[in-house]
Length: 196
Image (tube, rainbow, N blue to C red):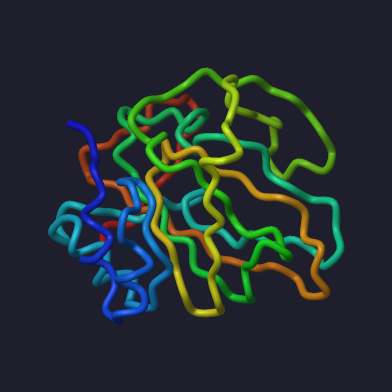
C-alpha cells in the first residue's frame, strides 16, 4: 500500500494559500495555518494513524548566522520501517525563509526510495551526513517559506534539505510524524508510537 497525500487545497482554507498550491505536484503542500490534526484527518480516519515517538516528533533549530545545513535526503532512508507511509507536519516556530535556511524540496521525488551516500560533515545536521546519490536539478527546487504558526506537510520520500541560516534570528521548527498503524518497525533499534 503506498501513501499519496491529498490535493493541497484540502489542507488549506484561505484563498491566498489555495492560489499558492495551484500547479504544485503531489508530495508538496503549501504553507497553511489549519490545525494539524484536522489536516491529518483529511488524509485518513483518526483510528488508523499514530504519532511516531522518539525521533518522530522533534524540535529542529538553526542558530542565526550559523553554518548548519541539511543535505538533500529522504527521511525514510534509515528509519527501518516496513513501508514509507509516513507524513511529516513541519510547524514553524520562527520565520522560515530562504535567508534563515528554510526547508527546500524537490517536487515529485516522493514516488521511490533512492540510494543515499553517507558524507559526514560537522555542519550537516543529519547524524550520518546522508545525501541522495542522484543529481538534483536546481531549477526544480522549491523553498517552503513559513511564518510562525504555519506548517507544511511532506511525504518521507520527498527529497528535501536546507541551506545555512544567514539571518539575524534563529530558525526553529517542530516536526511531527504521522504514520498509519499498519507500519511496523523493522530495525533492531526499537521505537514507539502514540495512537491518535
